[in-house]
Length: 401
Image (cartoon, rainbow, N blue to C red; front, side, top):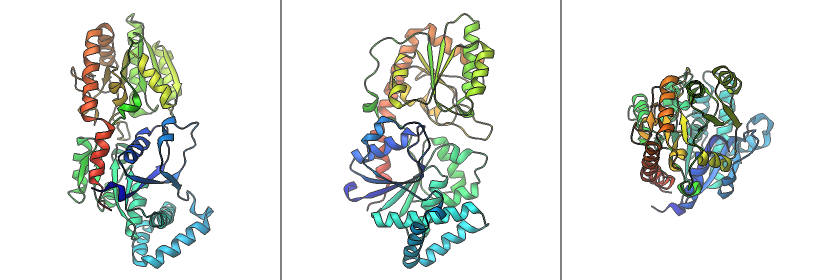
């Protein structure tokens, strides 16, 4: 395959996002493997910082009109060119977007018109959207307008959330060249919806081992339990705080450190005060600072749950395992493929703080077990979850230029 001649357009809702390091890491690795990439994003997140490793990315980032009526010249020029090129395609896309009539339909139609026009001007051969949400919708509409073929990577919230309509999901994905997803559970679920309309492939979330650096060379702080993730229901952090409170009442001296921001911080702080858990909330941190937290943690724990909305988290423990930190988690969705109880970590039922406290206490009391699980976890990451391998597998699915 001659990847050098191919120009990929990554279509994203927001870029770059603090919590979505995997997207930028994937683009950087694509470039390292010889691909030319441009990014087309609907908006730039209003976040306090960006991760330092983004400086490695060469891709040009184009921001589509977030509010199309505020950029009338850009929108009208794109509309004129697309209508000249493929009026029938634009009308088909308009019919899809505007029935039933809704403001978001108009916005998506005009954004997709600009996307189609600017991908054509840039010479994009194939578009790839992350998340089966707005990004996939725009790539699909641009394709209907005569734009490039497209594919989609799905994750969790974008397919399982209670607000996701299966007919809309089918509409966005059925015309894709292929659909990648991060776990076999996701693939099976999507297959029940798409029924063979689009090829499905598992491309798991992965980590850039070279960027993480070597395994930690010194013993960690034996009292530190670490969690990294957004403070939202699906991470199960309330259960973790309660578990640390139980350990404290059992006389086990532990300190929970949580890196990540989100809407549940006040609630988690109240839970910590009520349970007697010692918890440090670091908020959102640059990736480099998070790596320092991994290196001093005795245990990494993210007891993910299926949220009340249906959302769930596929894989959030890869970096900890790659750095040789023993892991305690649940078997929700993609985690069951990653954390195998007694082999690459310890697994507990979701929403069970007592079982969680038992597992954490077991690892803290048994350094030999912790070391064995950590070593096995690192080997699994090296063999199945390296970014180089995942990106190579993804590249093989993209059509030739």
